[in-house]
Length: 377
Image 1 (cartoon, one colour):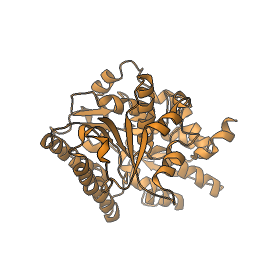
Image 2 (cartoon, one colour; image 1 turned 45 degrees about the vertical axis):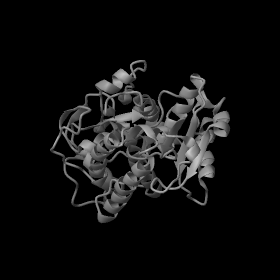
Image 3 (spheres, one colour; image 1 turned 90 degrees about the vertical axis):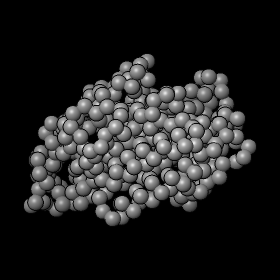
């Protein structure tokens, strides 16, 4: 019996993988069983989280609105639990296509961050492999394009042939560790595996309503921080942001990522970077965000200031502490050949040209989807 299993479905990419799968299945007139692993949380059980967090009205793409409830009723089954302790029903068979997206994205560098990453992204993920090993025909393991660490020049899809890794945090380090082990595990248990590595994920760009995402994090978090500071303090003054003047951030729309992840299940390759061929210049994206916040004291520096203002100190202690290492990364670009071949029917997005609209949308709803209807209406 053919079936699909998805973890991390309450996350940004995971929810969009489910949306994309529903669209593909509906287009192909297929109705396989789809099992989603969801933990209880916020006082809600797994089923409630599926309805409230994944199929929130503001998040649902227009292209699935006419039929998604039919699939919810007939095809989607919640397996309540953590990735390390859920149970697959015997009736589900042993021909699963598995999309594993559940992970912690803690970019911190302290002992607490290391423990969280080691527990969730390594220990619990290995337990997950044990649960699925006899039930899987193909595993799409979603990692990160940054598991290669900080590297200069052109970055290809093959990370595992490399030996020199300069990791920026425990998140990158443990992603690479589990990447290598999952391929060995798949081979030992006779199922296929591909590692799919998105870079920085933004809101939607291909599917309406555009720009929506279920979590406004990473670069959005910088804008959210300074938007809050602007509301609290009348005079922000000078803000010095450390960066590499030649640096760029590879930002990919979440629906583009989801399409690539779903399609990658048919590939024979073992590694694919879901990246764009062009980065967005970090100077440009920061300038756009600060302009939107109404802060004109932005300065770019090559070293973190020692004589920080109160606001600068708070920034580097929180959001900046996790993201500064990416702002000062070496100049690089992703080759992106395989993903462009996979998505050849879709024009590659030009993120620089749409970044202002993408960010402005998030800023205008105060980075909270519950504010979307009043804004649009």
